[in-house]
Length: 219
Length: 219
DNA sequence: TCAAAAGTGTTCGTTATACACCCATGT
DNA sequence: ACATGGGTGTATAACGAACACTTTTGA
Image 1 (cartoon, rainbow over the protein chains, first blue to last red):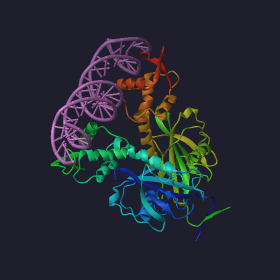
Image 2 (cartoon, rainbow over the protein chains, first blue to last red; image 1 turned 90 degrees about the vertical axis):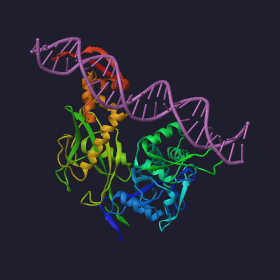
Image 3 (cartoon, rainbow over the protein chains, first blue to last red; image 1 turned 180 degrees about the vertical axis):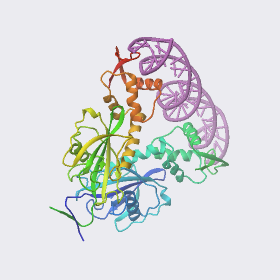
Image 4 (cartoon, chains in turn red, brown, blue, green; image 1 turned 135 degrees about the vertical axis):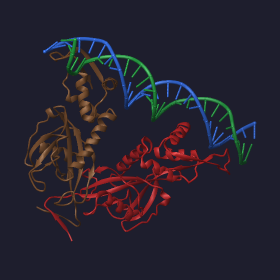
């Protein structure tokens, strides 16, 4: 089966930057490409939009197919369409991003991708296409979303914490997402002002040092 | 000539929301469509991306071809790709916007568009496709750009003023762009804090009332 | 007793917002 | 004189950023 048009059409893909925190470091979900171009190199998941699906639906589908990840709220970053960004043919991509708790994600490689793996953002492999640009833009957007306003993305941060957590643990999560250290006192004021923290009246134990108060959050 | 692919490809267009102030009211540049679908109805200018041009280049070119407008700094708004947004075939569009001084624009209808005209934002005709959605999003983005930060867009506001202007005139421009009234004293503090206003030591004359001081701005 | 992390307030600068009266001119 | 738009200052609240010492525990 083939499809013919009176004038040339680009291919359109959706690419999705999925961020998570693993072992205290910001990670991104990448797939290893099975096909040329950039065969065997790593890329952010994505693929061609189908004719009967909206952009975000295509992004969701590709994400699921290539990585097994489902049910995450994607946000559009923008379109990338440099003429030579794909050596095969003209490909315009619409980038999306999301922040997810990685341990709730079931990664499953599929026919489209040899492998799906988390990579630390400060230890990335070379990426296919212009995915380094896209990923850098997504990283910037993530930092803004988490800190500048009380967005849904910021609430996801608590998913990286156990149900009972210390304020130091919470601070570490937000520092990781923002990508820079935060002042302890300012952070505590900020988190208390923006969420309903519940002081459980319990303390950590077994630590080598002073026990910390445990909190839970009411989103 | 025809172009054949192994799987279906969408068409990709760029659509551009060009805003200006005319007679004290926010206007947008629309074209009347010469061809189906939505023949004879009004639309924001735009058209198909060529295979060898980047998205923003295509947007610039289409804008020039359809309206004669050149040399404006476009910003990408995002991609719109609902499957049924174009009845002909699947068309994904990347939206751009800009704010320009309309009296420096030479409008020229072309082969692609029967007519290019400015419309007041509060008196819009029915628009083709999902252009009402795109335009509404662009309107919101414009208000944010002008007021929230000292952006390039905000500097364009002064292009709507004569070289020598009164602060009341400047306030009217910013109110139009933001879409809501501003407090006179707060506005004067704000504009003085954010730009180099030069008090020319001159006054308006011929008005029916108290003369106003004339300023110019050093961008 | 020491090392290590927990915990805790204040100050300052910026920004946004609200608000009311007198002034200068033309008619 | 009056109508009309020009011109001016202060107070408050919210936010972000900077900054240092005491407390508690385990080893």
